[in-house]
Length: 329
Length: 278
Image 1 (tube, rainbow over the protein chains, first blue to last red):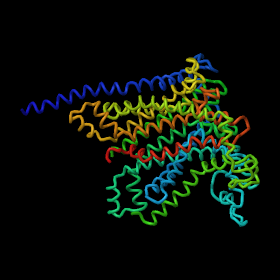
Image 2 (cartoon, rainbow over the protein chains, first blue to last red):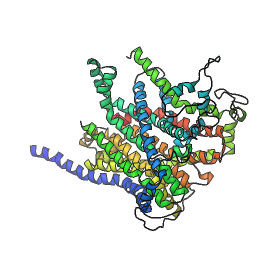
Image 3 (tube, rainbow over the protein chains, first blue to last red):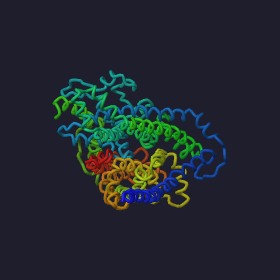
Image 4 (cartoon, each protein chain N blue to C red):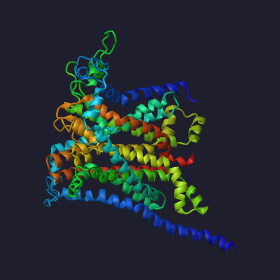
């Protein structure tokens, strides 16, 4: 009797194992084949292209080795694009992490009107980037910019002379002094255009990071919260010793997505500045587009965008490792 | 219970952020109701309505004298088909990677996610060559074929993460009780996965709306365009900006999407952290 009772579940588990392997392959297979065909295929084509001098609409070209990569690197515009890609990504993500952390923390408290505040805060996330960036194009307009109007007009009712630009000039911002009669050309000046692009990137990614942070905060068990309260942990202390360590894996996820969304984005720069003025806001993506499509150097365009690949792989692997380590410990 | 100090702290943080983050949308809305003489006068206060404003003329113009509604229809069509394809591929894959594949499932999952990191700018040169060769240029079908290249890896990763939050014991219990794996999937896993599936649907759809590069490269006929490129390439001609109409065009898809996001947000968060515990 005893031996039968032991044998039955064992054979059942073995059957299950057989079924499991077959099932896994059958369920994963289609997705893997699809991805290999639609991402792997073009990626290989892209690498092939980068090693040839193919131009225009034709794929045919002669093998030129690493010539395209060397040529691209020698171009000062390329190096500026590389620098801008890093600059946009690092600065906007730093802003995003800080702001999203503050917002998410404040949003967890059940205050009156939280629904509408949350709705307003999440708006930039819901709006499709190719459309919302057009809104920014209007905000940054050279003549009718609402930002400039607000900066250079007296905002205090009754002519009490309160000018916002004076406050902005007093702040240590790297955008130069604002002249009231020659208001800033947000998209026409190299430095300001960089700030304008970073602003839009941070603006559109803050809500997404907030959502991920909220998910992380919701996953902290209430027992932890109660224990912290019993131990008298409050304010910054509680944040530093309890909330932050528990939030780290989820913050990593938010950062990983944020880096990818910023570094590989073409839409924001393409719509706002088109890479200008004088190529000062080019990113690797827009420079690849300009070289590959506008100038028709398919091979070099492919090479430029391939410079992005190791960067992304390194970031992704580092982040995933980091996330896993936190999870284990 | 929260203290008054905590409450004030929340408002002090959320208020300014809400204003800054939502301002562009307020500004789009405001602009979309302005008349030309009111808008294009530097002496007018931009925050108030002047001569001829508010007006709905810009909306009438957008609907009747541009191809905007065609682009909306095209976008909805492409979005729905892409979401269906995405779910058909990503749902089983995400589940299997989380549950059935064991240790190599994790590695394969990471591999699939890495493909999502391959930017469209890298792929769109060879893609447009392929699309041209199979004669799909200027056809919505080209977008339907290419968009899953980023929605499938993303949705697979998302669903895999989601399925991992469902305790395996739940499934094992059903299996031990004599249910087949398929029955378990259908009766136990699927119902508690609804938030995760909805999350995947919303994300995939929003990814479709957010694409710009592929639509720009593949579609040049204005009646086959989607909103994302149609508004920018057709409503801005050279230096002539039709600002009020542009703002209306950007707001119209944003508002229902924002409501949708907010409605599903709690389920999204639940899905992200594991809804099976509740």
